[in-house]
Image (cartoon, rainbow over all chains, first blue to last red; front, side, top):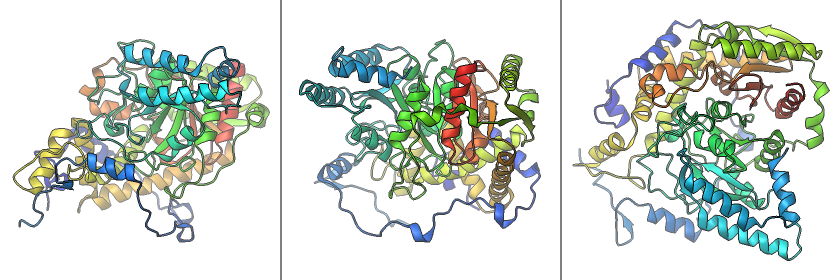
Length: 85
Length: 465
C-alpha cells in the first residue's frame, strides 16, 4: 500500500492525530440507510452540459500563462524528463 | 443605511469625485496595520475611477455599483493581478483570466481595490495560516480576524472597502463576518458561479458578499447571481427586489437546534444572548420550535473528512510544473514532492494528507463513503425541518474570537469551533450572518434557493433588535 507521503507528493508527510480523531468520529457515528429519494442530488444533468467546443484563449491570457512558467527556455516551458523509471 | 446608495448619491451629486474616493480608500488600505492586504490594485483602480469621473462630467447616468470600491479575497482570479491564495507556492502567480463573479461586478462598474489576506487556500478559521501575517480583528487587534475570509471582513468593518467578496466552504464568510460585526452571506450553492474561484472543496465552495448593510448584501448578491456555462452547478435565479425584502410578515415559524444551545462548548454569554433573542422573536408573535440535529463532532467530522478529500484532489495540480514556485529536485517526482513540501503550510499539508488517507484503499469505505452517507442524512434532516419551520436560527460561533496565536496550537479545537457553520454548508443552504443577537452574530438559514427569505428575516431582526 502506498504511504501518505507518496500519495500526497509531500516529503515526510505523516498522519495527523487531530485528523485521526475526526475519522474516529465518523467510524463511530450511527448511519441509517438513506432511500434513493433522499440521496444527495448534486449531479449535473446530461441534458444540461455545455457545448464541447474549443475556445481559443486571448493573446493576453496566453502571455500571462507563459509569464507564469516556473522555468522557460526560448519561450518554452522546461520540465524534467517524464520517463525515468 | 446602504453604503452603496450613499456613495452613489454623493458621486451623482458631485459631492466627491470617484478618484478622491478611491484614493482615500487606497491610502487607508496601504497604511492599515491589520494585515488585510496581499496586494493593492492601485493602478487599475485609479484608471477606472478616472473613467467614472469622466462619465459623470459628461452628464451621463451611472449605475448603482459604478465607482463603488470593493475588495476581493485573494483566491479569485482577476486577469493580470497576483492571486496567491496567501501561499508560498503561488506568491508570484498572476491570473490569466477573471472569475465570473468578479467580472460581473466589473461589468457593473464596481472598482476593485485590493486582493485580501485569508487563510492559505481557505484552510483555516482564523486567517493566521497565511504568508502575509495574521489578520487582526477589526474590533480588538489582539484577536483573530476570523477565517478564512478574514482580510475581507476586517476591510469591510474598518470601511477600507465598501463591500468585499469572500469565499465560504464551511463558514469562511459567516464566521469572520460574525467576529467583526458585519453581514456575510453564503448564498445557496450554485446561485453564483465558482468559475475563477480557486477550488478548496468544490461541493460546498460558495462565492458571497460581506458588507455593512443588508441592502448592500442584496445589491451585490443580485449583481453576481446567474447561471454560468463555465460552472455547470449554477442555476438561474430571480433577482431579489428591495420591496420583497421589506415583507417581513411572511415568516411565521422559526426553529433552532436545541443541541447547539445545550452544548458544553458554547459560552454562557453567547448562549444567554441567543436565548434572549429567541424570546424577543417569540414576543413579536413568531412561533419558535426546538429542533433536533446531529452532534457537533459528527457535523465537523463529516464536513472535514469530505472537504479534505476534495482539497487533496483539487490541490494535486499544484506541483510547480506549469506555474507556481517550483523547487528543482533530482527528477520529476522529486521536484513535485520538494515543491509541495516546501511551499504548502503545515495546515494545508495536514488537510491534503488527511484527504489522501480517506480516499485511499482500505479507508474509503469506512470513512469517505460513510461521510457521504452522513451528508445525505444531514441534508434529509434539513428537508424534514423545513417542512416544520420557515427558517433556522443559530449562533455563528460557540465562542468569541480567540487571541492571535491560540488557534494554530490546537487544530482539532479550531475544527470544532466551526460546529455551527459546517452543517449548513453540507446542506448547500443559504445562510446569512447578521451582526445582531449575540457577540458574534446570528445565522439565518432557509431551504435551498430561498435566499430572499433569509434577507427578509434579517430585515425583521433589524427592526426588533
